[in-house]
Image (cartoon, rainbow over all chains, first blue to last red; front, side):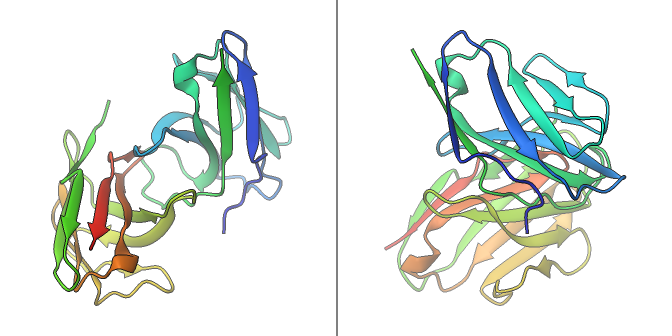
Length: 113
Length: 109
């Protein structure tokens, strides 16, 4: 079973920041937080991951609370192409770990003009 | 970055026939790959773990004799849907490491 909880849907105006929350209150010390998104009829796209420090890359920022029980994915300037289902997943180990990724129901983000 | 490919991207087959889907890691070796299935408006459901050089590990409720997995090399895993039926119509996605393939849309008529 997925170990994360996300709101089923969110809206965001184009050009504004999209802040997608995720609760993972039972996260273990060795588990990383991963974010993926899936645009309709495509495979999931990796966005970002983190352990306990905040992370930023060219796509997004990941803010993890100090107790690691929740996190927020931030898309700083949402565009219409960011409309997708966003999945927050916890999994042991970093990106080279071979453990499976278990998907929850995700958040459907709709970016509107 | 690393890329995972799938072939074919879509396939239509008749009921009772078998279909093979390939998953390749293009610029890295993967001893473990994963196969997922996704029905419309649902999330990805893990079907099985593909292990190079050994038997696949199937999730509960997935028929191993129906969904044959072969991981013959460090860059290739195949999923064969045997004796396909319309209820097997779905979007099949593989992953290796952190990355996912583009998916294969299977329609069984």
